[in-house]
Length: 228
Ligand SMILES: Nc1nc2c(ncn2[C@@H]2O[C@H](COP(=O)(O)OP(=O)(O)O)[C@@H](O)[C@H]2O)c(=O)[nH]1
Ligand SMILES: [Mg+2]
Image 1 (tube, rainbow, N blue to C red):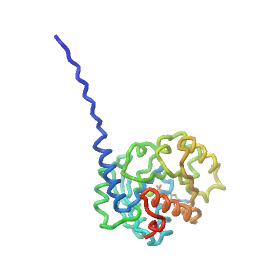
Image 2: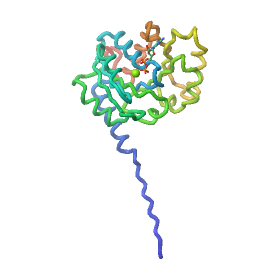
Image 3: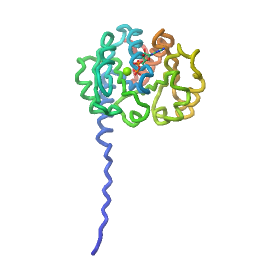
Image 4: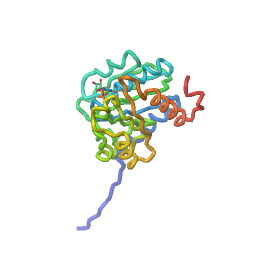
């Protein structure tokens, strides 16, 4: 009996990629800089966003979509400062673009300057999901060890900024900011490295200026338009 082999090649991620690109393009047109914030659980993502909103103190229109497996605790922490929507994944270890799109629709209508997406705490799975962001920021806290970039290279390869958090604890733990920066830049040479302490505010103003510059650059805004 004659046999015929038919190869069907279909890019199963094409629809997802198109949705992420379309979300990004819509936010670009609105002047909204989308930042995907990733890290291990407890590295200080929510604390950093609280400190960021406090530092800007209303100078920018900021919204946060925050993802967790369960509870709306992070949304409650952020609500005094920013418009926030909690995304509960029901056990999934990362966010995907359909959930982000739905959560974004629940925000009040506003021409946001910054939209932060606090991802589920995990250095593995979120590395594989484009959430329509312009910029990805990965946090490593000094209590996690300075060897993490080489162990989780995909996360660092796709990020633009490394925030070294909890620097107030540096005197108490064996951690070298230079070593983690070198480890990360071996993977992503253009990575910006910013040490911060969300508790006492050290490094927060440099971090905020870094975001303002990145927004103006990425969205093609004149520097004077970076602050509305
Ligand atoms: N010592 C110190 N603790 C911090 C700092 N930032 C956050 N934390 C603490 O680290 C814990 C986890 O912070 P959180 O912001 O919830 O981390 P997330 O899970 O990544 O969002 C909390 O107990 C924070 O108070 C910091 O700069 N220094
Ligand atoms: Mg959090």
